[in-house]
Amino acid sequence: MADRTQPRSPGAHAPRAGAPEAYAPEVPRRLDGLVAEAAALAPDRTALVCGADRITYGELDRRVTAAAALGTLLPGTGATVAVASVLHPDFAVAYYAAARAGHVAAVVNPLLREEDLLHVLTLSGARVAFVDAALYERLAGVRDRLPGLEQVVLIGDRPYEGLPALRELTATALGGHAPAETPAGPDDVACVQFTSGTTGRPKAVRLTHRNLTVNADQIALAHRLDGTSVTVNHLPTFHPMHLNSAVRAAATQVLCTGPDPAHAVAAANEHGATHLYSLPVRLARLAADPALDELGLRTVTRIASGGSGLPVAAAAQLTERFGIPVFQGYGLAETSPLTHSDDPDHPVHGSVGRPVPGTECRVVDVESRAVLPAGSVGEVQLRGPQVMRGYLGGPDGTGLEPDGWLTTGDVGRIDDEGRLFLIDRLKDVFKCDNFLVAPSEVELVLGRHPLVREAVVVDLPDEFSGAVAGALIVLDPSATADGTAEHAVADVVAFVNDRLPYYQHIRHARAVEAVPRSGNGKIQRRALREQLIGLLAAA
Image (cartoon, rainbow, N blue to C red; front, side, top):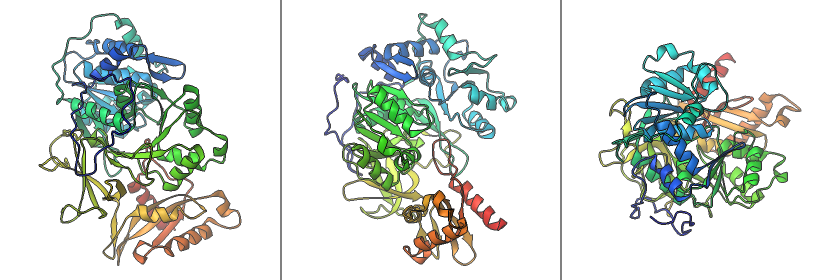
């Protein structure tokens, strides 16, 4: 295998949509092989930084082996192990240890409340759960409704009386015998990822060792990661995408747990970071921060945004301020997750870029399902080696076509250069007087008004038009300095409607203090629709 300490060629661009290049990466055949390969290549290189803790690749690999050898927790192979994705090195240990022991890791959002936690643990059939203390306090409330959950192990630094801690268990096992080689192959399921649940209860996505290892390589290529890279992970939870790609490249990853965007800037400067990963909502907040001019990035060469769309104005402002490209990508739980990445050196703001190597993308007509030419708007479909094996619990509703195409439920268009531009979720698009309305297009105009800090558009039932646009608007504090919020909202609505065709007009709007989001920064549009309907009914 080539020496992965050397930078990858900057000319290794992803293929254009519909015409993937030949792609046969030399990747480990199993998920835990990512760690073993990095440890063999650079055992003394720092893998993870979390506060004052620094863990080398050699140490990480030893901890993974020690955790995998704890057969008393879960004898045999093939069981499901739930791992809460807290932003802590223990997550990486438990995640890879599950694969090394021949089990399946079910990645759980540590911000879930009791009922959603009960749902994902029941659906996955988890027999052991690695959780932090905060999540365990919620888990305790539904533990009696999880008869299949045999053992709970604490991860993280905060102790919890009565629970065994992963670090204590692995400390006693270090230096012992490695677990016997398990029979799991590249096409066996290694991980269960849950969908975001923005349009319903989360579904459990089955991902194979091959899905995950290939995608780790695709991401490392697309993001220009190598052994000299230092990435700052400024996300509320630990997503395997960032973990796997950094380990694949034998790069160093800094975990930034502070919620303020300025914390990520400080962490990047302290550790000489080359890449800064964050959520659109955090980057947008950074772009709007009055103290932005006082901040600087000394070593970062690229800022990456993912999870939802980053406003074009925010991307442009950060690029201008820092002189650093700000780029986006696109992916789903069903695709391990990344399928697209914009050029990290020359991004086109508003685009999620071209498909990563080996991946195809096309747009089809929503009704006829015919493949559409460049520039046409339709539903996005994907095909590639990172596409899931299917959902847990049966074949119904997998979204997979017989020839391997995955139907995403996202509406978008592909330009002549193969770049994908996302417009909206298909379930969020609605018809007013038989005209198709994409809420995101109305939100784009809303964002141009100087008094609007944030806004969400939803469909509201209408007796005559079928549905009309309604908006929840977060106003700038100056909006109500000389009058009521109602007057400011009316001015905003008039501004927007004057710039849109009638069927996109906002018919109802209310001011709110904030737009609630999920733990990963996504808008819960269904819940907001009900909120607006409730506000209108109360009025």
